[in-house]
Structure formats: C-alpha cells, structure tokens
Figure 1 (cartoon, rainbow, N blue to C red):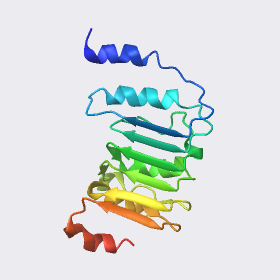
Figure 2: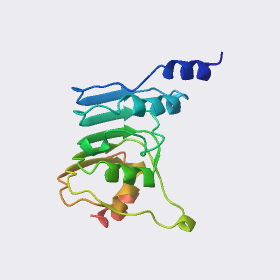
Figure 3: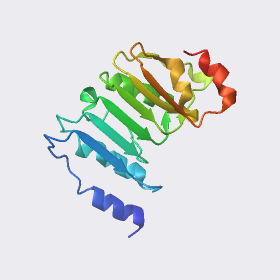
Figure 4: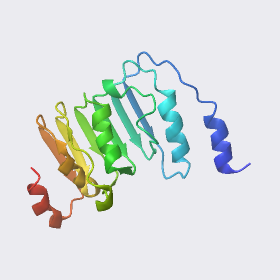
Length: 166
C-alpha cells in the first residue's frame, strides 16, 4: 500500500463531527505532498462548529470554498498555502464577518485572456497581513474599516506601486 493510499484510508475515517464549543481551529502540515487530501477532509470534519470564529490553516490545501464550512461566522482567517486570486477574494465573500485576514501564501495573478476577477468590499476587516507574493490582493479589495496592515518580506521595488493602492 502506497503512502498516499494509506493516508486516504486514514482520512476516510474522518467524519463530520459536532463541535459545539470549538472557537479556534489551528492545523499545521509541514511540507507534505498529501496536504491536498488532508484539506479535503478538514473542511468536512469541521462543518458543524457553531462557535468557530478563528481558523488558522498552515500548509493545507483548500479545494473549494463551496464545501460546507461555517464561513459566515468566521472573524479571523489565517492561511499559508497557494490560493488563486479568485479563491482569496472568494474567502472574503464567503466570510463577510472577517475582522482579521492573514495570507502567508502566494496569490496567482489572473491572465488577461480570462479578464480581471471581481472586486470585493469587506466592511468588517480591521487587520490585514500580506507578504510580497500576496500584495496583488489589495487591487481587488475595498476595506473601509481597515486599521492595521502588516506587510512582510516586501521587495522595496514594489512599494511605489503599493502606495498607489492605498
């Protein structure tokens, strides 16, 4: 039995559970090629968590924002893995109550032939953390309540472009 097949077998035992008091979910996977499989099951396992307000996923791939998950009640979301620009913007649409968003991964820009992605207004977001690879996100967000912005690992050459966005 291969390593990936073994992981699939283990993850098949993960069933949706009821976590009535769970407020914070933090899962970190270190450089595991099976992170896609883990991400699929994480979304399913925690779909019934009525008190969940903070999610921190490090190294886990989220396959779809359409999966059942308590997005609308989230206040904080931290993520470190690759997401397309549209997927990142989709998080803001799925979780309108977000107050804090941390993007530790990279954002793939759209291609001209696909046309520009939609823009999102996030009225509750007060704190935003972005790295060099996710600055593009700012071009597509309107953040009227933003109080704190953290930029990490930013190339000084991008700062003139960045100041045009704020």
